[in-house]
Length: 464
Image (tube, rainbow, N blue to C red; front, top):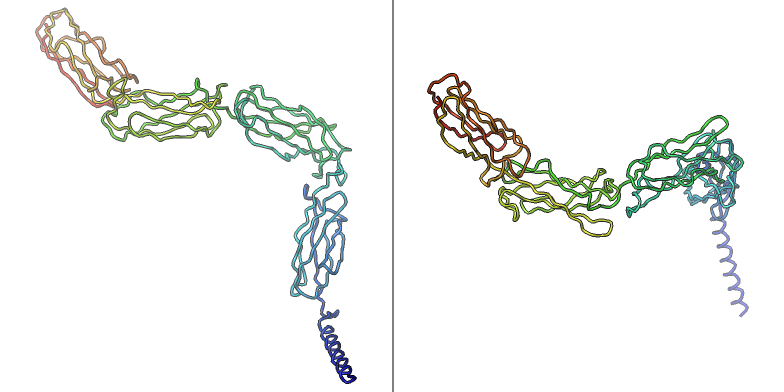
């Protein structure tokens, strides 16, 4: 029994001795620690100004050391590590919110540059952390939006603008240097838009806020902030905000193309651009991006388009060649445009267009025998196969040759852009020299030429 007890004690002693040896091997000595120089900078996030006297604490979880920043906001200190590890750095200063960063230190790198600490001002106490000078300039701190809608447009109707007043060093002014900021318009559309408030005193952060409220007219607004300082007026640069139009209004919704009559009867794929003009109830262009849907009873047309800043939406139509409208007949077709108004109703507008073909000329009478000093009247028509007028710029001419004759009436016509009428004409043939009595053979030519093509008719007769 005694031998057994002695053996147990001996074994336990050997274990303790071995453990002690192993422990002594793992415990670091001063010669095994590596010095890592840790350096960085602390600045004021709002202004970029270096912060002097900020405290820097560094820990690996077991060891804690610290330092403070100099007048340049910089710091540098040594931290000893026994192995590669994460280090936690905490930067703090009175009047600012602390910040924390984690860096990885290695024994192979004796110098470690830490990312710049950017401390935010702690405004919970209502004070700026450092004293400022007098107001010297404006800084546009925040603008809630770059565009709003006109009154009752369904879009956002106001915008908030926050100016920050700074001293000559770029530091926001404190309460001791607070000033009254006045707000006014530069350019503006004059539709009842207004600013609120028109003046306000800067707060503890040197800030002044104004709200733009839209009126009934779209356009560009310039907002200017001013301070009446002892040395003269301090003025901000104009802040630009666009007021866009509202939702479509049926009375200001139209669709059109550049011509009424196109010389394209029988042409497949002839391109015509159609444009929808969309306004709101205040006669402004609707808000950009308003959707317009298009349809036609002939050909192929782009299904939809979005309005631009002028309230214009454009699409292309490709003709099918021979349209027939149920109301107006062969050659005619319609294009319709659709959108939605402020009451969620679909509104529609429509336009009528014509495709005209080659000229066909007929004249009555078809001959003449003009006595000395006499005259004779003629009626003639120029129209296409469907009985429709020629297109814009088609020329119609009547000329007489041979003998002492001339013509008057509809003898030189440049066709206007029309869809109806302008197919029936008349002229007179007369003896231009009644004192001369002699038999002659004369000729009348009726000629139509231009975009619709060329066609002519001749009438022969005698004059005395």
